[in-house]
Length: 155
Image (cartoon, rainbow, N blue to C red; front, side, top):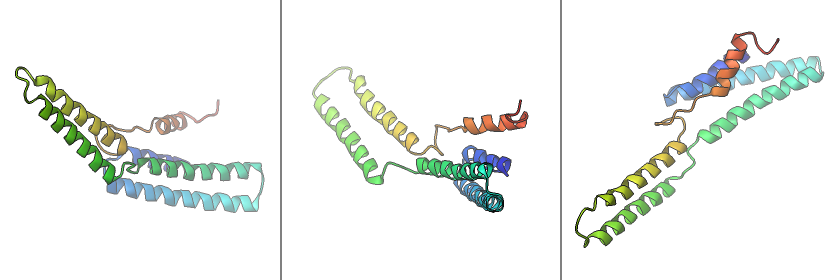
């Protein structure tokens, strides 16, 4: 079950389709629930330190997934985006208005809109890690999968 859960978590990061990502998340939650019920039944039948550790590990799976989901939600509200765009347009307008009387090569003036656009692009990419240009790879989950494939943690 843990290997199936690991495969679901890796698939969550690797997929770019939001519908598929939501289905994968629900499948992982169902598998978590199944594992929790199984482990809690075993712990009630045979309460010992090993069962407590297994229950804690199952709880940590849930906590880790919830932390991932909260960090993947859009953090910048729509009003903040409107304010950022308003400041960008105003600053570009004011710079252009200020330089209108200067004759000659004003190509450097195009640097400000380009820098503002790049800054807004980076904010947007950080705000939505599951989509866009920046791709988040589950390196720790892939390393765990590789460890399990080659025989686990046993010497």
